Image 1 (tube, rainbow, N blue to C red):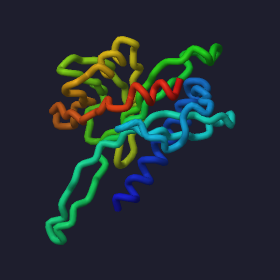
Image 2 (spheres, one colour; image 1 turned 180 degrees about the vertical axis):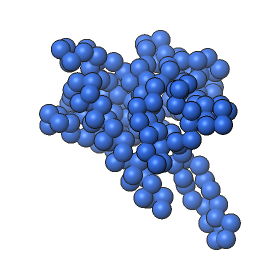
Image 3 (cartoon, helix red, strand yellow; image 1 turned 60 degrees about the horizontal axis):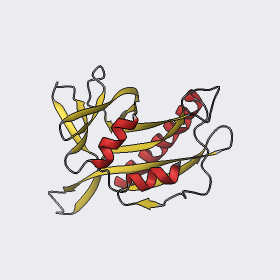
Image 4 (tube, rainbow, N blue to C red; image 1 turned 135 degrees about the vertical axis):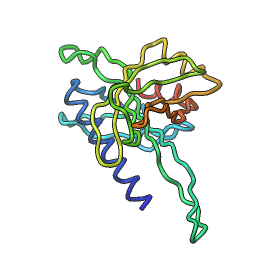
Length: 188
């Protein structure tokens, strides 16, 4: 079941990135600076081919929790959130000007209107808007400013993606900045 969820997550996120590339313009074409599966501490490079047959690479982080089956006492990893970050063109006419964006894939028990927030040491950073949901997850996208990425990269304490669930309660999903600086440099 976990493998099925992971496969579903990867396919959904990959299709989202490719679809966003079509919506926003051609995502950045990455040369040999980053390779599929390359690890940057808590981030992993993933690449796909867009509609224009160009390789699109981004960084992915999965947030997992360990659950224990009461009958078998077996521990299993369950993915509760997936984050992808990369550079996308800001303008269809000028594909060389790129903007750092993050796709946040979180459980679908959300209140859509408030969107999401990246939170660093109780400071509110980039706000995200939901772009779609399926039976398991909702996807939100956020633009990340230069100031926000500096704060994220220098974060030594709490770093989260915060949402409001359907019951009106704030839920924070952990986000790690470990390896992000090197990963983003490889994507440039």
